[in-house]
Image 1: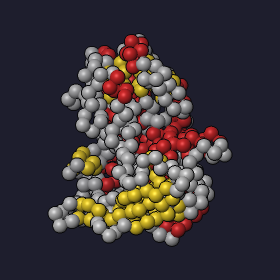
Image 2: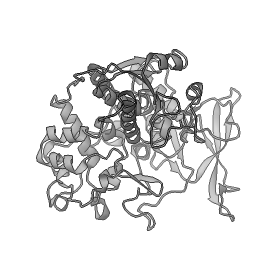
Image 3: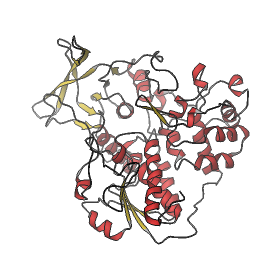
Length: 490
C-alpha cells in the first residue's frame, strides 16, 4: 500500500494534457508526466485493501474487471509513494512485459476494480504504471539483458503485435532463439499501425523492438507466412511455431448500396494507411486516406471508432458523426451493475472531446446504424441513410420504421469490430477453427492439435484488449517452453 491515510489526504490527479483545439494540430502524444512530488502523492492514495481487486483479472457477468496480468499493483504503488523507482520497476516487470504500451492504451481494468472508486475516485494506477517504466528508461535501468545460456531450440513467432512480442520476449529470456515474422514493413502489428500516433507514439514501440533485438530476438519484416514463406517451411526449420496473427477479419455493414461503393473503408485499414504515411513522410506522400473537407461518418462507438474520430479531425474533416448501434449508457452505474463489475456507463474519450471542441457537440448518435449508402455517377459515396434502432412489441431490437434520415458523407469508416482471424493460414496448417473463427487449442492450453504449433492473442481469444494479448502471449510462452524442455520455470 501507499500512505495509510493517503486516500483521505490527496485527491486524484490525472496526467496533464494539451487542450483539444491545440493538440489536433499535430499527431503527437498529448499527455505529459506529473512532477515527482505529485506522482508520489498519487501512489500514496493506494489503500490497505484486504483483498486488492485491482489485480484480480476476473470475469463478472461476461465482462473483465481487474488486471488480466495480475500486476502487483499495491506493491509498486507503495514504491512510487516512497520514490523507489528501481524497486517499483522490478515489481512491475515481473508481471507486465510492456508497461509503456498498457500505460498508454489500456482502458485500465485495474482502476475499474479499485476500492477507492467505490465512494470516490480510483487510484491513478495506469498513470503510475506509465511513470514507473518511463522513469526506468530515463534513468538507464532498461538495459539489454540477453540470456546467459541458450537452449539451442528455435521458435518462430508469426505476428509482432502485443501477443507475439510478449511471447517472443519470454521465450528469449528463457534462452530459446526466437524469430518474429511480420508481414508489414515495420514490427509492432496493431501497436504500430492499428493505434494512432497521438495515442501511442511509434518511437515508443521501436524503442522496445530495439531493446528486444539487443537481447537476441530476430525480426523479419515484410515476410508474410503463407505467401513469402510456407507454414511447412517454418515447421521444418523451427522446433515450435506460435501463431499470433490477430483478429483481422473486419465486420462489414449489411447496408443497401455498400458493395462496390468508393470512399468506404474499414477502420483499421484507414488508421494503418494514415499512420504509415505519417511515419514515412508526415502525410506528404498522399498515400493516406484523406478526410480533408469531407463529411465523415464513423460506424462503431468503441475505442477504434474514437481513434477514427480523432484522426479525421486532425486531417481537417468538414464534419464527423459517430454512430453507435446500442442505446446511450447511463452516466452512472445502474443498480444491477455494482462494483467491482466493469461499469456500463457513458465514456467520453479524447476523439469525442476534440469533436465537441471543434464542432460544438458530441459526435455520437446512439441506437443508430446505416441503412443505405448513396453514391454518385463515379461510384463514390455521397450520403448515407441512417435508421434508428428500438425495441418492438416483441422485445426485438430492430430498425424503427419512419426514423430514416439522410446525412451527407464522402468518407464512411466501419469500426464495427471483427469476426475472428483470417482463416487461410490456420486452414493451410490443418488447424481447427471455432465458430467465432478463432484457432481452437487444447483444453487449458495454447497448443493446437498439431504438435509444436501454438496460438495466442486475438487469433486465439478473439478481438480483445492489448493487456489481454500480452497476458495470452506470456502464458503461451510457458506452454511452448514446457513443450520444448519437458518442463517450464516461466
